[in-house]
Image (cartoon, rainbow, N blue to C red):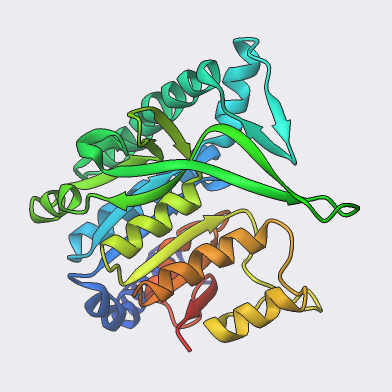
Length: 302
């Protein structure tokens, strides 16, 4: 029977082997900017949140430049309910009025942002929390959605209130953090054209920031394995052309469509690759970056 000492030695050898196999990937991403959209179960599960913070610290230690953009939809919903703020929905999208945006900003820029910053700092890193309003980091205009009436074929504009679409990223704000080895943690709150506060979808904000920084990778943590084919099997890699075809033929549908479209826009803007990752998997970011098979679906130009 293998004794405790032998088992420990086997564990050490396995760890050394893992580090050795990861070394080429670590070299590949040294000095590269990685924009990571963080949300879903990965953020809500305490153990996964702890591992995520450690992974961000490791990325910094090998010389990468991680930029974290976080969401917080469930937490916003809980706070609105607690404060008895009624929400109106149009076509399944929450209308953000003046009362709601105050709660959104409080939860995103306050509670959630500082929780992530504290976790990274506790893991040995140096993180600073920002919102898109700091330094005019994210400038935006109000988002307008349209719906076509099937009978009259007339399009109707859906006003979602204080919901925005990024128009400009002030990237030099983040350049300063890169030079000082500080990891920025960004809440997707923006400044509108009239100086108003706008709520931005976290996926959209992360994609816009990745484009502005010419990031090597956009990593989007989700609550699904990645993009799947018609048989429900995970697709590990797609070209942009293949991804667009899968949207057109209905293979990619529902909530996956806007995520893939965000990835495609980032690639069109010069990001080397965008990855939809299963954030429920421990160390999902490291698995994607430092192993051969990754942890989701990568979309690249082509």
